Amino acid sequence: MNLEELKQLTTAQDAAQRKAAPAVKAAHQKALEAAHDLHETLTESMVEDVHRAKLKAIIESAAREQFSSKPDLQMAGIVLGQHAAALPPMPGVPEPISRSGRNIIARAINGTASYSPEQRAKILAAIIIGVLGQTETGLIEFPSEWHTIPSLPDLWQWASFLNEEAVNALRAEDEAREAELLEVQRLADVLGQATPSLYAVGTSGEAMVVTLRNNRGGPSGLGNGIVFQPGDNFLDAKQLAAARKQKGFDKAIESGTFEITHTTKIVEQL
Image (cartoon, rainbow, N blue to C red):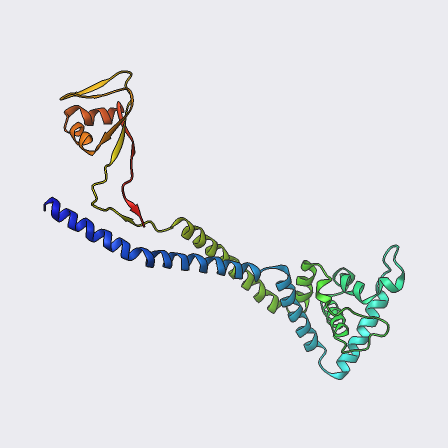
């Protein structure tokens, strides 16, 4: 190995780095953007409106299944009427408003608390049959966007009374999505820190400058006329090589008398 061969190897590594840089950067950017996009998608899938829509579908499907025949639908109207009549008036609110469709929905969970689980499920299903207009509701009018009225915990409970299995599946889906979101966030953070850095060394002979700090209170000599003044001393590659040849240099570095605090970068970041 000689200097010319080393320069050839350096040129070859520079060429390889330059060739790889665009592909490496593009791959990193693609992965980072994908991580951000997936994080956004998962986050949007876990917002309250999405949960409400899914719970609405579970509840309405279960209600239709419970009251599927014409006699069943007529019975739903009877159950709904009995429930509305049994609801106590709201303090300071006229009775018709206390028993309006909106308030029947808003009070559905608390208003059925005294019933058995079976009766409660029947009442909650009957309310939905009324909402869907599949049974006679008399003067009671229900809003079409009924699932926006109860609190989200009440809506979860409503769905649990009508189809607990479907609710458990939805909860499991949420847990899996939360775990996935955490892992996506971790990967996005890691990718953000892993920005690729490729360098070309070059063989132009550009000078390297080293800052050597003499921590001794006065000048320090190494022999052969090499003396470092207190504080920072600036050395080129030739001067540093000459200093390294002196026996006392390594000991001065180990003891902390000398300290190399900065080396100029003469490489090109790609």
